[in-house]
Image 1: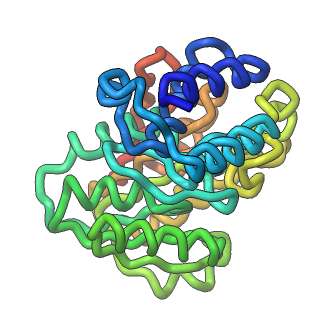
Image 2: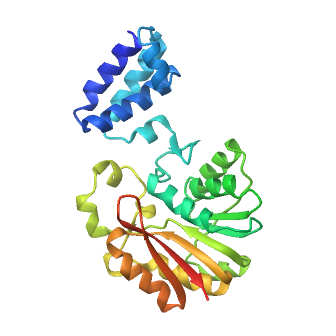
Length: 282
């Protein structure tokens, strides 16, 4: 089987689950993973024959994809901020909109000698991306999941980023005494209401970790409240909080920080959705 034939066969099968453009993107990722050829190289080598082992690997991957498992979990990799991260079902798949949060945060940094805290680090993608851009910063990243912390540490090692990872329940305020004062807090916390689940793709609701996604309808802003309280004690004067938010709860989330005395700015993403907030301790 040639690379071209393998690509067409996979693409045809993916059409059962995906729209044309998404199917093509996934097929590109898989064939690159199998063959080692990027898209342009694959075109130039379209008549190259893939090995029997590569055919078997392609078949295994295809069967997993047809079970509605996200391609990132199937390949055990996700690209974020120009870097390849290891991911599995224990951590969220990094999203492009989170890159926008990082860009906003980095644009506000004037002095690299900062103490930065990443709350709910998951795969470590935010902490590692920030460290790559702000190399002198001392970054601490925490997550309640010890498995997630192991994955984050693995990614930091592979990507040569020195970060202090901690397995900790952020809601346990008794642990807060162990933390220093930070100049910046960044977080992409759980913010999707349980009632929103019905309208979401099953690849998300049935595959990605619910603890990192969903919050109760009657207390949808609980993470932002905790972050705001934590910041009052552990954020330096004029320190900043950068958080990703639920696009339908922008005003409400902003109000949480204002109630605790922060100066706030609500920002839209590139799609025009209210997806980020900056809160300044004054």
